[in-house]
Image (cartoon, rainbow, N blue to C red):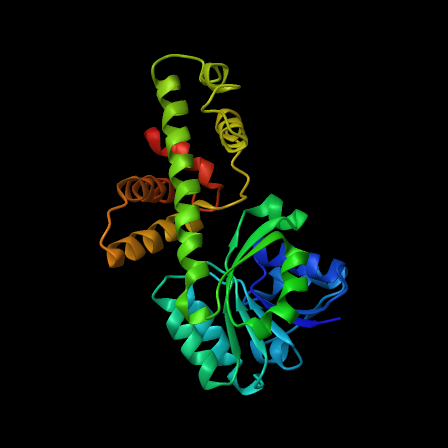
Length: 288
C-alpha cells in the first residue's frame, strides 16, 4: 500500500483519487475549495485542510492543478512538510517552460520530480483508462508504475529526466489534435444547420466512412443534442490553446488551427459558457 497525496480534485483529480483508492492505496486529498474534495471521504480518502497536511506522510505527491504557476504555489505552501526522497508526479497540463522550474523546486527540496501529464477526459479518468505520458528517473518508476496502472490503461516512459518535459511536450501535441478536431466538427455541424439542413445528415455522410471515428461520433452527438455536460471544459481547452501556442512559438512553428480554435473558445467564454464541455465551441458559430 502506497500513501499518496492528491492535490487538486477537479473532474480529473477526483476520478484519479477514487481509482487509487480502489487499488488499495492510502489517499489524502486536498483542494483549494474544500467542498470539492469532501465527497472523496465517502470513498475512503482523508481530506486535508492544507497542502502541507496532505503531503506530510505521503510517499508520492500527485498534483492535478490548473497550470504550472498554481502547482508551484501549492508545493511552496507544502514545502515545510516535504521530505527528501518523496516522489512528486506532476500530472496536470502545464506550460513547457514551467517544467524545468517545477523540477528545480523539487531538486531544492530533495524531492524526485516526474513529469507525467495524462491524456484523456472525464470518462477515461473515471474508468481508469487514461494514458500517462511520463518522464522521470528509473528509481521512481517502481513506486509510480502501480499508481499509474491504477489511473491509466497505459504508461509511456519517454525520458529519464523529468526536467526534460518530454511528457508535457507530447501531451500538448496530443491535446492539440483533440482541440482542433473538436473545432472542425463544430464548424461542419454548424455549417450544415446554417445552410438550412438537418445537421444530423452530416452523420449520415460521415458514419462508416474513412473520416468516421469514435471521437467524431461522441462530439457530434453532443452538438446535435446541445448537451454540453463537461468532460473537458471550454475554460480548460482555451487555456491549453495558449500553452500550445507558446510551446509552438518557442519551437519556431505555427499552429494556425489551434489558434483559431482558441478564438472560438474565447467567444464561447464571452457568451458565458466556459464551464461547459469544449464541444460547446459549436456555439461560437452562431450569434450569442
